[in-house]
Amino acid sequence: MDTDRQNLDLVGRRSFLRLGGAGLAGAALLSACGGTESPGIARVGTAPSTTALPDAVVNDGVLLRTAASIERSVIGLYDTVLDAGLIPSSLTATAERFRDDHIGHAEALDGLTTELGSEPWLCGNPRIEELLIPAILTAILGDEAAGIAASDDPTRDVLNTAHVLESLATETYQSFVQMLSTPDLRRAAVTIGADEARHSSLLALAITGRPAGYLQLEAPATPPAIPVALALPSRFGTLGGLTLVIGAEDEVGLRRSISIDTPSYNTYVYDFLEPSC
Image (tube, rainbow, N blue to C red; front, side):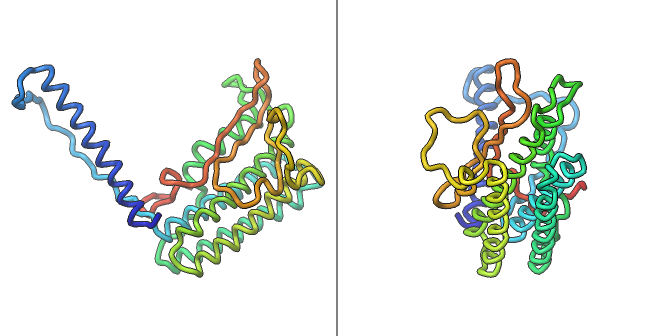
């Protein structure tokens, strides 16, 4: 779907909601008062002014800023778990290398963003930072005040989290390739996305082991409680949602299940957004 069509879809949905709400309110008022003529409405005071919503344009700059924001959210998570000693010593150097790769990716995206005349985004992704990262850390580390127990296996959960976030980054670049407008930008997305795919594959082998971690030849009759990390989860790269299952079991034996989707309208870093980091 091209950018103009996306903008029309956004405007169309917003206009529909606005007009639909006005229509319902008007119908209710006429029903209460009777008749078909619009009655006079008594009002005391001054009605507050309204502010028009900014245009949510999805262009190359927005896509690059969004990709850079996801890179920085992943960097932040690696820093947190490395500082907390939650990465096994055998994989510490690997995790540090992955984090440094993400730093390089973010800086490369910043350069491309500047060349387009947009402002680089130097923070994590706002939606991921607000909703996803806190939920992940709470499930792993626990929250005594909220009655949430710490994970029974933090290392397992941290490695599965890293695998899912690397997979998310891979899917992000794969989805952005068809949306970017120039061959050079598409080439950059493919190149970075390939790095992320290697990260997720290596983590899958570290988590599941060899040869079981390469691919699944036959689906199990009963899906496992915690999804199996695979280096090759499908023949081709997927754009479907990811499921992260982490944390301690609750009273019925269930763990925290978090659904993670590739970036869309509510995750894009638009030009009108202001960084808060």
